[in-house]
Length: 285
Image (cartoon, rainbow, N blue to C red; front, side, top):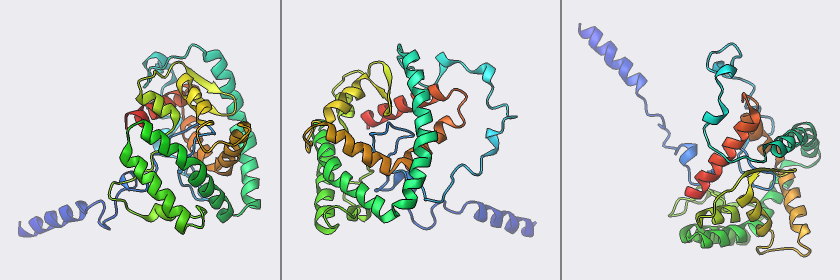
């Protein structure tokens, strides 16, 4: 009996080891984690980190097996999907969803693979840091102020000062390893979120050519954001700059995009719901 007691006690100890015995904060709660969208348009920045040689979908979990009963096409009901989204332009949206999907996967993915061979990792990271520091920070700062998120605005400004002063003008993201008094989870504020905070409704869902998932409110924010400082003259240079910056990190967004549409019964609706859920969460944060 005594031996059974000690055996049971030993098994309990082994199976109740703390999940974070190393003292690390889980990634989803770390101060430097960017609340990355499952998928965003090509103009939205994402800091989802994927190793250059990593294939996160090489080992597909068992519940994605085609023979599984978890997914039954006959039981799929679009009206009972996770998010109720107004979509009166579905014909237009589906057309551009198909075109964008071809551009992302068949054109953008191999083009970026070649780009990564020619341009080394440190050069791509440097370009990304410079754009985020000099062009992204002022707009995030302004939108944080407009949303009355003054603590976040202060963190954005302090990160800009640190990266500019000690990161060779923003080429190195020195501030990412700093732990501010107020945890910085990396939320990126934009004009669409500001409009949502002000109570402006999202309006109908809209798939933009080349840019991807959006809605009427976020499209207005996308256009208006190009005029926020710093703004290049003529204004179309802003779009050229951000298009280049987004192509520079296209592999990270494509990885997230494939994660959503790759296993979905109805990829268009999966992407539509994921985008709507993301924007709602960002606005309510």
